[in-house]
Amino acid sequence: MSVDTPAVLDYLKALQDRICDELTDLDGGPGFAEESWTREEGGGGRSRVMKAGRLFEQAGVNFSHVHGSQLPDTATARRPELAGRGFQAMGVSLVLHPENPYVPTTHANVRYFVAERPGSEPVWWFGGGFDLTPHYGYREDAIHWHRTARAACEPFGADVYPRYKRWCDEYFYLPHRDETRGVGGLFFDDLDEWGFERSFAFMRSVGDHFLPAYRPIAERRRHQPWGERERAFQLYRRGRYAEFNLLYDRGTRFGLQSGGRTESILMSMPPMARWEYNWQPEPGSPEARLYTDFLGARDWLGGE
Image (cartoon, rainbow, N blue to C red; front, side, top):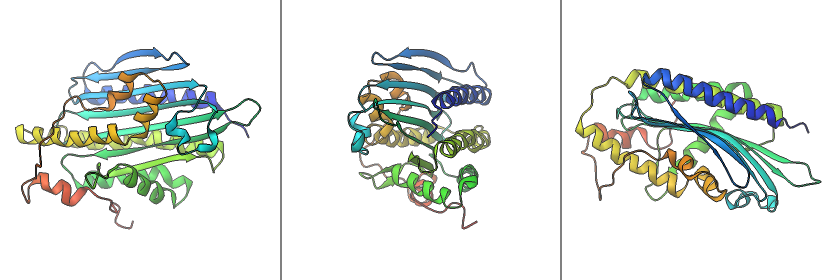
C-alpha cells in the first residue's frame, strides 16, 4: 500500500496559508500573528491568531505535525488494537469567532494519522469536517452551508454527504443540554476504506470547500446592525461552545494528552463568553427562534 505522507504535509501547509490569506482579505485588518513551536517528544507546528480584527474578534488557524512513541488514550480507546504503536498526527484546525453576533462562529479541521510499529505496515486514517454555529439563524445561510458541504462530497458517492452530515449532527451535540452545537455540516473520522489516494482526495475536497461555504455567509451578515441585546446573547451562546470544547471535543483531548502546545489547542475557545443561571429566551423572539428553528438535526436541503 502506497502512503504519501509528504504530500499530505505539503497540502496541509498550503491550506493553512491559503485560508489565512483569504481570511485576512475578508477581515480587512492587519491579519494573523504567527508563532512557531516545537514539542519535546517530537514535531511542532505553526499557530496563527488574529485578534481584534474588523470582522473577527478572534480567529485561529493552526497547522501541527507531531509524533511520539505511544498513541494517546483518546486514540487507543477507539482503536485498542493500536495500543503500543508510535504515531504521527498532522492537520489544520481553525475556529473563527466574529464580533458581530449575526455572523456565525465556525470550525473546520482536516487531519491525518499514522500509527507505526517497526516491522509492521503503518495503519493510517483521515478525518475532519466543518460545522457552523450561528447565534441568530437564517435559513438561506444554513442551506448554502449544506449545499457546499454536499458539493464537497458529491464526487465520492451519493451516500457520503448524508452519512457525514448525520455524523456531524451526532458529534457536535451537548447531551447535558440536549442541544446540537449549531446547524451542523460534515464530520468524518477513521477514513481508510477507500484506499490512500481516494481518501486523501476526499480530505482535500473538504478542506477546499470550507471557504466557499463560509465566506458568502460572513459577507452577507457582517454589516448587520447589532447592540447590547445581541451581544449578550452571543456571549451566552459562546458559553455552549466552550462547554463542548472542554467536555467532548476529541481534538482538544488528543492535543492535551499528546503533550501539544496548550495555547494552540485552546485557541478554539471564545475570547469572551458568559453563563447565566436558568436563562430562557422570550417566546417568539429572534433568540428563541435559534432553538425552535435551527438547533437540532434536520434536512436543510429539503430532499433536493
